[in-house]
Length: 303
Image (spheres, one colour):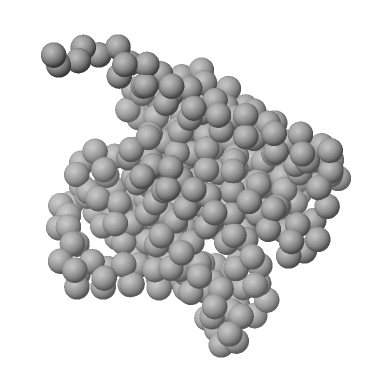
């Protein structure tokens, strides 16, 4: 089940860049992000109410959801969208891939979880692999105040993403399921986005074209409801550090799709980067599985 959730998250998030790209143009970015999470939260809340699966939350539960919504479904996206104005999307992906290490550090600070060397080493391999994959974009980035601003925004977005992971883990430790937690968190995140759009005077335009509407539905249903629920379920099951390795793999999926849809040309450096990313994946997951298997084999068996 964990493998299915992991692959589902990576494949969906790896393909959302196409839908995000199709949304650019008529509608302002913050408004598009608001539409995405407002629709996702309404659909989730309605579905959970109809199925009788919406949990009742106390004050602490709502505060946890508010914090997660602010970090994971609001500031996170605004920071990364804004960062791409100043730096290349490849460099943003490299910064974001460091969330595996940030998750390990934050899990230690928040919950006292031991930082394992294999997770850190796997994250380093993944980061190095993405550097090779996106090296032409990274090397072509000129050093300037704009570059520092873009890097700062990308780093802030990564920290918001990691903090949202911690809040989701805290929710699940408090007995709040990922579906209920996500539904309320997306609602709170979209309300904060709405307030921000109103305060900054963003026009609430809407593009009725099939392209924009199709992209919005894909991002709301799959990119938000399905992928975030799968990912945050993994955060609860595997821990934030190991689940966070998804952020290293989905740019690889995006590049693979780009090679078909946009003619991306693979180079020797890119292939080496892919190998490093996969090696990091093995370090993060396979050794833990082997160790569990050895421990299970060593257990006394009933006679």
